[in-house]
Amino acid sequence: MTKIEAGSARGGYHHGDLRQAMITAAEAVLAEKGLAGFTLRECARRAGVSPAAPAHHFGNLTGLLTAIATLGFDGLSDAMEAAAEVAACRANGNRLAAICDAYLATALDKPGRFRVVFGQMGLNWEEPAFKRAAGRAFGILVRETRCELGRESGDDLLARHPPSFAGEPDLAAILFVWSVTHGFTTLLIDGQLDFLAEEGGREVLLGLYSRQLVAILIAALRTLDLPPPEALANPRGDG
Amino acid sequence: MTKIEAGSARGGYHHGDLRQAMITAAEAVLAEKGLAGFTLRECARRAGVSPAAPAHHFGNLTGLLTAIATLGFDGLSDAMEAAAEVAACRANGNRLAAICDAYLATALDKPGRFRVVFGQMGLNWEEPAFKRAAGRAFGILVRETRCELGRESGDDLLARHPPSFAGEPDLAAILFVWSVTHGFTTLLIDGQLDFLAEEGGREVLLGLYSRQLVAILIAALRTLDLPPPEALANPRGDG
DNA sequence: TCGCTATCTTGACGACGTCAAGATTGATTT
DNA sequence: AAATCAATCTTGACGTCGTCAAGATAGCGA
Image: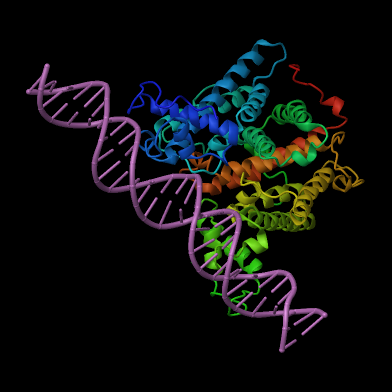
């Protein structure tokens, strides 16, 4: 249960730092029971507080989930930055590949938190801290994808107000990278690939992802050398 | 509300075809309120039946969701088969690209149903009908990916008992296709890309997916010409 | 016609998120 | 130092949820 000592911080009526205690409890619940068993009342119980107390700090359940999701985006950003840094120091290391690996690793490390971020629980996208965290994570993806494509790190896409990516030539590549990474991660996390790994466990799939899928992704970005987008326009002929 | 006429089929105490009525009601609820507002009681209400009635047909909420998910997989399979058929008849049509488009289109057409299939609601994977439907959908993906790769449609991967894909050389390509498609679909459905489409709406992103992302995917499969897997082994040099 | 069994209702249980009203306390002001 | 105030937390309640046990109903075969 990992019950936080009841009424911690300051022994009595007032908790002292309930906001942090709630977040800690929430992460513990997510780690133990996953998103399915996640409950506001349970988190309040672990924080040693009545069910109505968190309302003053988070408004409602959505507020708490948004706070968790903010942590999730920040954790994702930190992991990606660290992985890119390590890869950059290694000979033949690839920053973008490292980021893709870090994305999956982060999700596997804290699946519940990942599901809060990218699930369908309805977060508060107007929360400034949350918006900032999400923008940072996406910004890393944008930067590293363009770096891999050999682009100069000219204008920061996220700095535009409003962020209009309509004419951005690299947007397709960026979303391609994100789609592969997020798609595989989601499929694996949600158990959709379990029927493939009955004997070998998840290690086989992890290796497949890290060694083959990401390799295909990187190779595709390199060999195709996408823009100008006219070169890609309708090679399928069914439009 | 689209309330089904109370106690339909046969006017009285017994409904007559409650199972189908519940599924119909469930799909209506999903279409109107989405997965968030989905409730067993609400479905029973629309079917004109008490909250405990569905238990005899579905066991519990998971059973109803599994039935919906089975429909979801079947709808996905039907859409992919039809799209592939159409693409095959067109000059320069690409079956795999058509399948990727159909995947996204199906999800956009019935987002609630899609979220039941691929969400984290906990389905009953032991249900034979559900397993069969899921296997059919995955089989289509396998078949079309191998077709695109120029493989002979030799052994049916899904026919193996148990289905061991460990040594399957095309598995990476198959999962790559699924990851791209599922990843973009999930990101779009769950609103993660909304901040990109403030002015252009979703049409811009749809066009980007259909014309560029899928094109990159197909081109990658063609140019890379993956196996033997040794050719791909560790081109990143960080393993 | 008589049961038998599947089907559906009723009533209840505990758990959930949330709200209104009241209690408590730390901080600010006088 | 005393008084005041705003923030914080509790209590109790409301409606809704999924699920269960027990009883009512009705289609169906013997």
